[in-house]
Length: 493
Image (tube, rainbow, N blue to C red; front, side, top):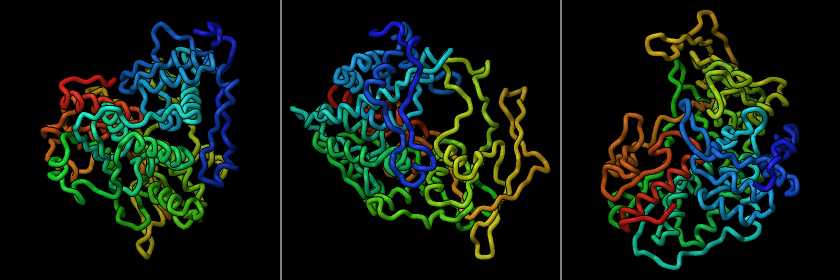
């Protein structure tokens, strides 16, 4: 540890964000990094704890705590303090295939589990990670070229989200010939089309794609395996297959009037916005999708927040965000001790922008839709909401939800975006390969291997809806399983 008293001498400091009033005028990334001289002091705050919960990646209290990738957090934090960013990158790339993604979109499970977070503020590990990877790209440390020896085995990866990309990268570096199939016109899965550009600039994904192609990985876009290309053909042409198609089956809201026009799934909406921006090289902003409209977002998670930020940029007249659950506490409660993930109130960038533009937080808690009300032309014009209350069931120990009589309200709505999560993977891919499914709608597996010989699975398609960092972990683990099945052993980490 380079600075034994760093956590006492330096307070947490994060890079600046462009003000909401400025950033809502474009779709550019708005979170900036500190100068290296200041960032190194944030590395000095890391105490290199005897038990570094930041990297243990476990499930506590039903939620993840610490980094699922087991990143060598204390080591690279210390190297940031010492300004040895090349050494820091060498540590980081041992466990994380894509730090440029996680350092932008990960909720920082490592920071929530940081020992400094018990009584003060955690080490800014997420920003340290981004500093490291951007330095590595700027100094040509990431380019490795194709493997020197090929094994002669061919692997198909179906899906180019974070799990598919991680599996492809690892298997290619092992020497297997890898082809990645993607049904959309660009690789990245939800990284490309499910996360807005202001949160993850798409040039970051394109930068990685070019490097992966230089390493020898082949990308085939615009091909929907199971429809455009038959599973039998894939199985014939490749020695192993990794299914990493995500869990893109959106959860619907079943209420009267659901068939009204103007009710969309959030990811479909976000995908259209991003595609139109990219296709026009950001010259044409699709204002017509939300300009002048009263927008209701159903769902309080990250995707719901992304919808709020997006429609504000598109000129929405108003934004309301409905959240079924009660408003979280301002601080940890006794039932949510460190190092569990803190179940506390978080105001994200979309809500901050709504407060700036409309003068209020868009969220309404403990509320759901009772009815969608269409106008004379069949287009949504209002929604009827109802309040919810929760009571603990003494028999099951769970919280039972019920509607509050007399709490109904009418909210204007020209556009409704459903961001209620996902129920599982697309059936047609699983059916095409004949793999067994779980009751949750995911692929059944044993150590990443499915019920069909030669076919493996990873990511949300196996795990269910989760985080990018978990998807990368899944892809790396699946790559080890595939490699061992081909070679009889694996030296992948």
